[in-house]
Image 1 (cartoon, rainbow, N blue to C red):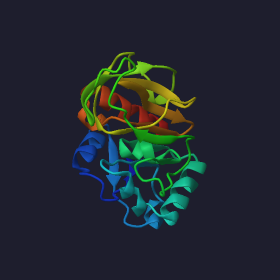
Image 2: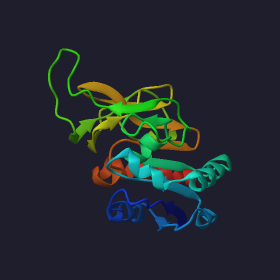
Image 3: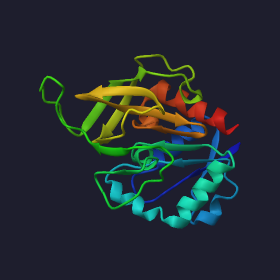
Image 4: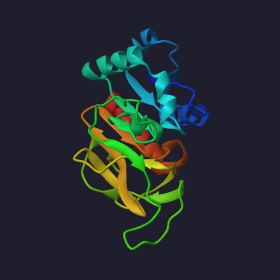
Length: 205
């Protein structure tokens, strides 16, 4: 089995993520210190809630994770973990993201272009609009449904693989090289979610 580091920075229950990863053949461990990341073939940063929780991923964690990415070990961000891949978030303006993807995350406006109100947080199933091909979405059809729960979003950029619309359009899957992120919860998204996790495992090799 391939060893995957699942980062626990106290921003959500990791049990369902561990179960989903086990279902796709991953051997998951939770490192207590950055040094414990050394044997990881890949790194997953999950999380829910406030961007301020990422303060636990201090400079040493960041340097170590960036070093692994530089060595070609795939990094996957889930929900809050996707937002952390960017430069930062308006939710916690003084706190930097990892910065491997360009742009700032911000709160959903709560209305569509025609002024129709939508609920924030965005909770429930919604569709993926395929914008580009990338390894993380191999076998995922345009329009596939996945499960979201979030209030903040990442911008649509050149690294956006799929977009989703909830009042406004935002990045729902991103990938640049060995770095990928999903705004939804693959562990709660049925077979589509498992397909995405299998694709990540293929990236890990």
